[in-house]
Amino acid sequence: MKIPFVSLEQAKKIIDQYPTPFHLYDEKGIRENARMVNRAFSWNKGFREYFAVKATPTPGILQILKEEGCGVDCSSFTELMIGEALGFSGDEIMFSSNMTPAEDFVLANKLGAIINFDDFTHIAFFEKLAKIPETVCCRFNPGGLFQVSNDIMDNPGDAKYGMTKDQIKDAFRILKEKGAKHFGIHSFLASSTSSNTYYPMLAKILFELAVELKKELDVHIAFINLSGGVGVPYHAEDAACDIMAIGEGVKQVYEEVLQREGMDDVAIFTEMGRFMLAPYGSLLATAIHEKHIYKEYIGLDACAANLMRPALYGAYHHITVLGKEDKACDHIYDVVGGLCENNDKFAIDRMLPEIEIGDIIYIHDTGAHGHAMGYNYNGKLRSAELLLKENGEIGLLRRAETPEDYFATFDFTKLFSK
Ligand SMILES: *Cc1c(COP(=O)(O)O)cnc(C)c1O
Image (cartoon, rainbow, N blue to C red):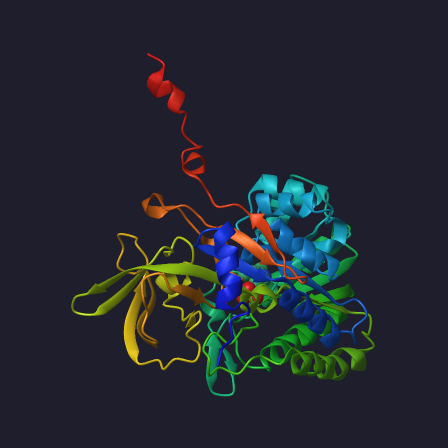
């Protein structure tokens, strides 16, 4: 069973002040989880989680994570700007981008961020803009399929990211010649994983590569960046990843591979987005229509512009009808938004309690890649983001868009100048 972090009574009080739809985040959940992540890797002296800003680029959320000791993983100019505005600097910023524009590299370099080169050719591109920093990182793509026992987790051979092994060797050699002294290796091989063995398996691949690179090129490997990919239980029946077991699994491989080679000062970095935030955010919407044709539809005041994952990936998001948690799920509905786009369905053939107009629909696990993926198709406006604080108060993290925001890129005065 999945339990909302607000009751119907709490939700109604919030809605008196802020109309639906809105994303609501749970400060207590975010902090407790971030502390657990830090505890799981506390065996590693240099450990740092660089929160993947793209998942939830909301300053109030990033501030909470900063207070919990996290850095930021940025991949664009504006994500770097957010990081800078919040006071992140130097090695608190990982710049993991790809197909990077020149101005992004320039800003990342100005902030002293750790540059993670996605491609071999990016080194020459970067050199035209700035001096190669002393600490650098390269992204590795081993190609092929990435498997855990017989389960294919993902298909790196098909992914646009990272360098081949030969390229990363050349990259380290050239970077060293150009003055780099401390090296990191980064890789992201599988997304939204459910197995506690993903990070340990990835760690083994990267640790073995680190040993090889150190031996062949005599370089100092300063850190290994396991990036993101740790999943969350979107379905009620899914088991959650056990971050303590994951940390322990990485520790074992660390001892087996790195410590054995005397490489015991290598820091472990992560760039989790989903695991840090998804379960601690929800989208609250109101049922505003019911429709009975060939199927039974419930129409919400939210749509895919507020949460794109179901439309984009067919992703499952659990739904609770607030106040009806204990009622039997004996009705079958498609729960939909109002876009003129038939993919705009939060749930298809979902068993739920009978829904009445005015019911508050709580869509779970929208804290990462939720509001962030919002868009303005059909002229729909992005919703507010609210924070349920630890003391029970509600904070406004981001106001809802208004038509003025939607039209802000036009100059209407021209239409009226004659
Ligand atoms: C998206 C992304 C992440 C975060 O991924 P999650 O699945 O949210 O953990 C981390 N690093 C990079 C480079 C990414 O592109």
